[in-house]
Every structure is written in C-alpha cells, then in structure tokens.
Image 1: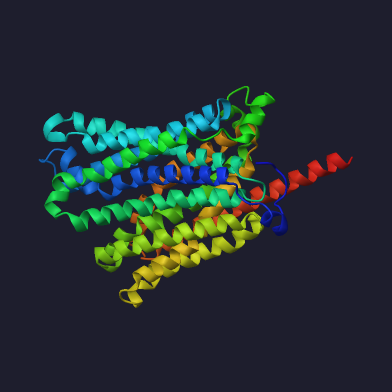
Image 2: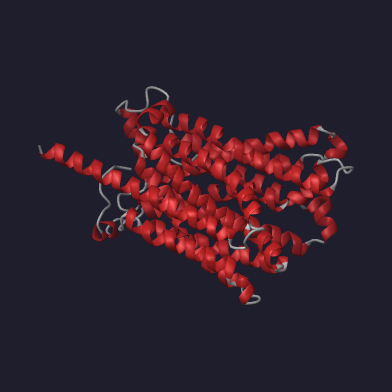
Length: 443
C-alpha cells in the first residue's frame, strides 16, 4: 500500500475487484474465520475441558480457573509468535507465513479434539494442552496482521479499506461461527453426551477445515508489493523489529492505543457480555447467548461497512464519529436491558453496530508503516497491545463491576477516546509526511 493520499470518491468508485482479488479475499477471510473459530471455542468449552484435563479431586472452581489459565496462555504466546512470523513475512514473503499460520492453528486444534484426558495421561494431559494452546496463540498472532497486510497489498488503489474490512469481518465471523457450532452441539446432543465426548466435535471440525484452508492458501500468489520490493532488493536488510524500534516508535504507540480500543470492543461488548449480564442483571443464559449471536453478526456488518468508507473518508474524520458511537453503544448495552425486560438482543445488536471503530484499526496500522517493515510493524503493535489489554481487561472489569454496573461501559468509553487520539495522531502525521514529500518533489 502506498503512502498516497486517500483517493476521491469518483476514483474509488472506478476501481473494481478482479476475480483473482475476490478469490484471494475469500480464501484469506475463510482462513481467518477458521482461526478465530478455533481460538474461541476453547473459551466456550472451558468448563467441560476442565472436567477432562484436571484432577477430579480438585474443586470445580479451581479446575475451571486452571482451564481459563490455559485460555490466557494463548494470549501470552501471541506477541512472540506474531513477531517471529512477521519477521519472516517481511524478509521471505507474505504468502509463506500466511499459509503457515493457518496450519499452526489447525493441527493443535485437531489434536485437542483427540487428546486423552487426565485419567489416561495424568499430569501430562494439561501440560500437552498448554503447549497446544500456546501454539494456537502463536498462530493467531501472525494470522490477523498477516491477513491484513496480504489483502491490502493485493487490493487495487481505492479499495484497500474494503479489502481490509472484508478480512476483518471474516475474523469476527469466526466468533459467530464458533457460537453457532456450540449452540448446535447443545441442541442436538444431550448434556451427558456433550460432556462425555460431544465437546470434542467442534475441535475436530475446526482442525479438519483448517487443514483444508491451508491447502487452498497454497494456490494464492505472493503480493505485488512484496514481489516489487524483492526485485528492487528493498526488503529489510537487518532485523525489521530493530528498524521499527529505531524509526517508528510513535506509529507503534498510536497503533497500540487503537488496538486497546479494538480489544475493549471485542472483549467487553462481545465475549464478556453474556456472563456479565447473567451476573449483573440475572438474565437467563439462553437470552445472553442469543444476544451474543446478534451482537457478533452486527459487529461483522459494521466492521466491513466502516472499513470500506475509509477508502473515501479520512481516518481522522471517521474516528470522530465511530469513537463516540462506540461509547454510546456500550452505555446502551449496560444500562438499558434492566429497564426493558427481554430486550437484551436489541441492545446487543445496537452495540455491535456501534463497534465499527474496530474496522478503522487495521486500516490505520497499515497506513502507519512502509512496506519494508509493514508486517512487523502491524504485528508488533497489535500483538503486544492485545496481550496486555486482552489479559488485563477481564480483571479490570471484574474488579470494578462491584462498585457500579456501568463499569464496562466506562472502560469502553475511556478506551474509545484513547483510540480516537491514536488514529487522529497517525492520520495527522501521515498528512504532514505527504505534504513534505509533495514540497520536495515540486522543488
């Protein structure tokens, strides 16, 4: 992606995606959806995983805490995996890493579905599960940044926002897919069957389809941007991470601020919403599950739409609209359901639509870094911020909700305005750089 100004509406409208570019978007989005599906089903099935992989002599709450600890280990592995894969993506090529990441997710997921439990392997069962979970975290650390870079560098000028949004929509669609599979599992099997063996089915499905996605990705072409850099010998000659820390500290900081907003929207308004509503307002689990599905569907639609608008509207202007909307959606979700019984799916859907800010985040990060270190820059900022805020957000929310049920909304609002500042500063810095380049050319 070049550093040229955002194209006009007429120029953007004149650009259409070719069949080859549509095929790339479909395969990239499918793989991303499967990776996020593989990642989140562990959270949905944590209670059953705890029954099979930890000693029966332990208290139920302790086993569940240990299972969620394994879930958190995936977040801790994301920065290391993402940075290593991004390093090779900037030096050896985007396609190789993009294909490897989905395989690194699929194989551990399949093995989770086949892994014997504590009764068979003893202490080895949770240890192997920990290693598999960390492999998943490393894979997803490279998947989202790699996917954003890959599709953006394949997209025609004036359609980068749309291409990035379709991929991001595929990622969030993976959460929706995981919710639907778990819902189908619980409606077709008895509770006993799900507990005994049915919980393995979602992992096996995800692993098989992930391997299929990896095979399909082998037919993708390397991005034109990387091929051109390689031909001109413009790929990073030293460690991309070292170049970033030397020359791009400010874009990294701004990108981390925007990623904080993304994590707040996803974690607080989507993933944590069902248990919070059950605890805070005693809303039945069936209603919170339906609300989660509605919110995720609306989130996916919103992300694609908002990302596409960045092809014609400056990021700074979009942030001034999407940031306050995100805060308003959070307050509606966490304040209105108690006043309107059985209305949670409505407010959850509204909150999902207000999460369009999520679509601005990858666009801003892609514009912040030049092609030579783009993969590493996006991966470094995104994964470190996600590891920090993804891990701290549940603890912060849990500690604050006893003081006020609006704590989740307040937290999202603070993160939203931090993200607005990050996008505004990144966009302003880019406009300044473009003006300087134009002035040097005219001279």
